Amino acid sequence: MKSVFAFGASLTAAALLVALLPSCSSTTATPSTTTGGLQTSCDESQCLQGNKCLHGDGEFKCRKPCSSNNDPATNCPSGAVCVAANAPATIAETCVKGTEEVTAASCSALTKLGGTHLTFYTCGNGNAPPKGCIATAEPNKWCCNDAPAETYAQPFCKRITSEIKAGPKQWGAGCNATAGLDNNVDCDSAQGFFCFGTSPADGASYCTRYDCHADSECAPNFYCATINVAPNVTTTKPTIHQTTTACLRRDYCAPCTADLDCPTLNGLTQHCVPDDNSVGFCAPECATSQNCAHDAKCVDGGIGVKTCYPRAGVCVGDGGLCAPCRNDADCGDDGACVRGQYTTELSCAKKSEIPCKTGSVAGTDFKCPASSAPKATIRCRGDAFEQVPKDYCHGLYPFGESADVGCWTPAKL
Image 1: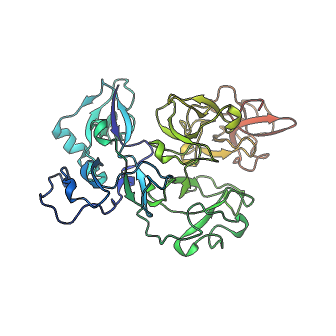
Image 2: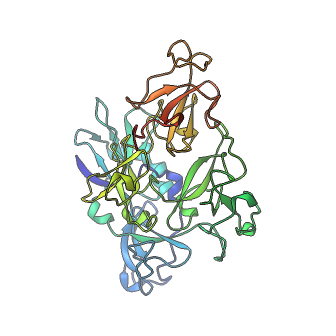
Image 3: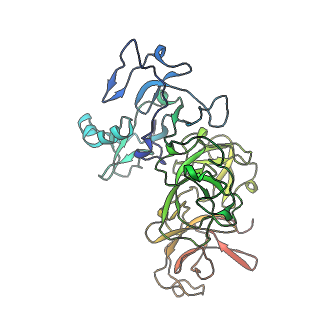
């Protein structure tokens, strides 16, 4: 495998439409060189104080360097976020690089949209898809940033594209869930901040903005997430196949491309850890599995330090029954992403092939697809769990004389 820097799996081309912080002088002694509308040369003597000529997003230009979103000594000015220039990815040696003509025909539109030069690759005949590349309309055809990793290693500041006057009651400020979603007195509703939470009794609710389109619209340590419309701070009743977007904190299992994306969590250092599919997620350091969520374990995921790691191997699975998920869209047209109240797991429930009964006999009381969790007990009890839609199969976690929704939590905590 050859290591390159390409688009992170959590990013879309639209997410790259961000404005760079003003960093270069408007007067330069030597005109910059451009290729395809992108700046490819830079005179550092013409940069503003504190800025350097840095590679990133296909260009070489004046930028403000950074290395943190938490440390005041190394983070960005207000209104900007420290980002890795691009996310690490791998392309199999057996993938075939396209000609310049094919690249221009298939990838030029994405290059123009994202500001990063992309190269056409064919990765068929059983090759694993290249990580972080953008799929074209043709099967096994991809557009990838295959620039050398060393030319894209320096993080830099990018401006948050949301025009917000900084003040209280904004990013991450606590809010009383009982005061409602919008027009919550604890949030800066005049500038579009709502109260985000998972129930009217959610004591961890906080102020944020909804209807984002890219991470660049969110504050440092937040990302633009697709979420189910409900449950929320006004209701525990879930919606089915109704999603929206919101800037959420980068807590455990949030997508990431570098450690600087992941803030401390409850006082613990977080790292960007690759999952079983090499997709990055935020994970806090731990000493034992007791320090982690019920559906996680404390292991070294390949970065040299122990962190919480999903027992399923991924934070978002393939959409099958019991696959981990973040929202209904992760579970397909016949699925729903459901949360256990005790296990706090998020896993896919799937539509039963027959109307469900209250019994436990597979094929008679319910007919479910194969489960992604080989040890999970499968039932179809939407009548007993409010968060599970009627006639949907789900994982069942028994404890004592009660039970909860769950697929990956160990039988004994």
